[in-house]
Image (cartoon, rainbow over all chains, first blue to last red; front, side, top):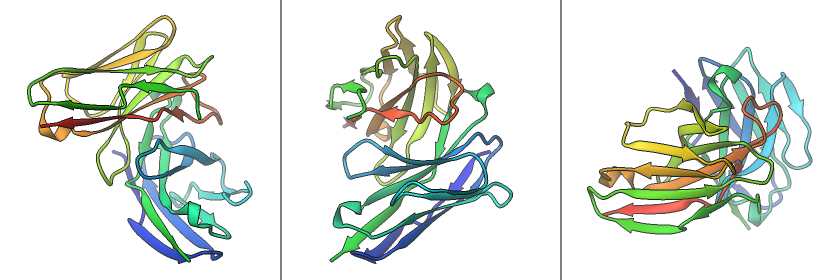
Length: 112
Length: 115
């Protein structure tokens, strides 16, 4: 089966750093994606990991440990516009297409 | 803007009715996936189409069906609508079936309300 867990909600102050964790237990693994989704809008791609380690990508880097089934997304220098849901998604193996299994999302509220 | 378009943007139906949702993929993308996103939850995979053939299906009943056309646009059909089908339906396109570092690009979604 596929199981992806994220905290449901986090609150932080503008300018601060917040780390969103994601743990997964999936039958197949072919990469992990992070998406940002503002209320009522489509998810937009933030970051991708397939190998262990930190993938640096400006304010939206992401870390992966395949042996631990764990990823995190550190949001740096938070801005008010970063208030959104952040979705962790695991891609299945090529034999299953590039099906994404999503976690429930973490709603981040940035306060002034 | 991802270049993926969906229609209609909103739809209201009653229980038992049928609905067809449409998606145009980004230029050059031959793979389309459909997801259902209930309020406050993450998207759930319905199925994927690659070159007009179904290429994987999630845990959805047969009353959820789809099509992909030669121009790679796609339709999602839902028969015998139930109240729990109320959700945001997202279409996502990608350049090829097996992935690599390419992400899926999501359309704006169709919000379906079943009364």
